[in-house]
Amino acid sequence: MSALLRDGATRHLLLSSRLDLHAPETLWDELERNRQYLFGKSGATDAAYQLLFDLLRSKIKSVPVEVLRENLADALARLDSKAASDAPYLAAAIAINGTLWTHDKRFSRSARVPAVVTRDVLAHLGI
Image 1 (tube, rainbow, N blue to C red):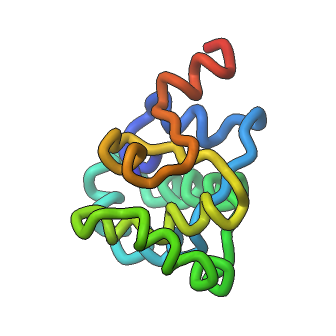
Image 2: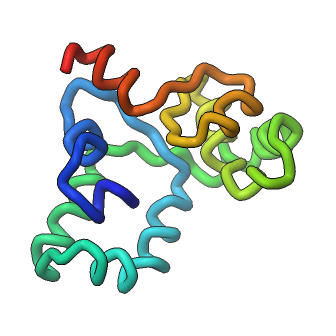
């Protein structure tokens, strides 16, 4: 969501060709449900917002819902009840044996998967 709201480090990283990014397929539905809010907060024109949305969608590979379902029980078992809404993201990381990029340190500790914050990604890329 932050990439749609402001032109910052997260947006630049998400659009970078140097990262192989994946997210739950359900992310796109969540963004569409919140479109009016995000669009209003972004200050972008409708055309600019849609272009950015389409660029992000082309850069971030979707982890199919079926794959998320296969890993959801494991993801939920690793999380406390406060973080249960993040289970699809953890299920995606488990499914692809990936690293979780999060801004929530509590979530990254409880998830028991490799996790990084934005400054770690920037450092890894030498930015």
